[in-house]
Amino acid sequence: MRTGLISALLLIAVASQWADSAEPDKNGDYQWNLPKGFPKPYVPADNPMTAAKVELGKYLFYDTRMSVNGKASCATCHKQELAFTDGRAVGLGATGESHSRGAMSLVNVAWNAALTWSNPEMKNLEKQALVPMFGDHPVELGLREGDGFLPMLRADTKYRALFERAFPEDADRFTIVNVTRAIASFERSIVSARSPYDRYHYDRDDSAISNSAKRGEILFFDQRLSCFRCHGGFNFTDSTVSERNSERQIEFHNTGLYNLPGLLSYPAPNVGIYEFTKTPADIGKFKAPTLRNIALTAPYMHDGSITTLEGVLDHYAAGGRGHDNPNKDPLIGGFVLSQQDRDDLIAFLKSLTDQMVIRDPRFANPWPQTN
Amino acid sequence: MSRRLSFLRFSILAAIGVGLVFAQAPQPQGGSTTLVVSGDIATPLMLKAEDLATMPREKVSIPDQDGTVVEYDGVPLIEILKRAGAPVGNQLRGKALATYILARAHDGYEVVFTLGELDASFGNEKILVADKRDGKPLFGYQGPFRLVCPGDKAGARSVRMLETLEIVRLQK
Image (cartoon, rainbow over the protein chains, first blue to last red):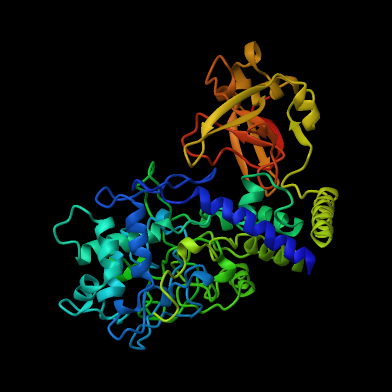
């Protein structure tokens, strides 16, 4: 009990230090203050990061008035306590319509080369924000051009001040373009960089993770399992860009999750990047998401069809649940794990959980509880 | 006040206790703590970190993914090959040029270098058998030994968890 209290106090102390150091500065230039090992993210030239835009974006992100019926906001599918996922197999829109895929984590989204499970062209957060706002298939937030959303912003005292600070030079500040710029800026600010594993790996703090997790790390980077080949790098994904490396060939993978009879082999409409490329070899290819905070983001895979991390290990150990899929990535060859190996890998994956990012007030709902 | 003091005392003792538990448990290592040099050579070697410490050492600096410079410290591969009696320098001619080094990792990963690309008279590639990164021993999935190939554009020959260097002469 007391040890738990001590851990909590230590966590709070470290969290406050990190929170202080990463505070946006008052002059408008956003200070990333990234720790060792984390490159500066790529930010589009037409939407430079500012503290004021991040602040405005946070209010918009959590505002249910951004939906057709006042029932949903970005945070409905991207909850801070779940590393900005929603715990559901597939997303659920404001009107009750189901999405065909699960909500992806927004943690460290600033480094994502591709933003969605299976659209290789969706690389820009500003553009992506329009999909949940205005998309019809399915309806997510359900906004419509010409509805009352922008007039609401214009009439709201809080928003008038926030927009003025974020876009001081714009003649008309209350535009959809500015809304998406602010939301994208807030999303880019959600950085997870000091999980227990980071403290072990980057700060050489041997007490940060257990020996089981250390053994799991070695297994994770073992050639036999090759987990690191798709989930490598500082963000544990091969879909990563940064300021120095903003152009990158994005990899998508068919992990043999399905092997249905017929041409598609994956259940429609989730046929991978084939939906966009129309190249048969792309059927079933999806993005390898970050493994940071993976213990918080169940259920797993694009359709949430695996409920636990143990189930994910079973899938890969078997060389894919639909292991004979003709498009399967050659890396998914299967392997044998002892119970100790399994426990160690799970311990390693759990060491990627950053308790700070899910409690950090900079990323929390700024509205009073009644909103 | 006394409660606060005893809580502080307890906290310090608990922190020390937790530290000791971790300090006493053996650290899992990726690869063996012995680097084996074997094959078609006069003097097979079993090298430990303390052996590498006594050999000619070099440092190479390469940029990490965040742009910060990472410094690896270790022994040039060619120096290890010299000590093992591999044909280098004046001896590297004729049939000896058909000699390669098979570097094998703990997990079975293997890559090949030729003697010609390492020798100063030919390729003169600076390949390092590193045991330190930024002044600290390599640990976890990287160590305790790894190759560093600063001239390579891709990182795939920079073998982590290096355990064996096997010298193979194709023509004897």
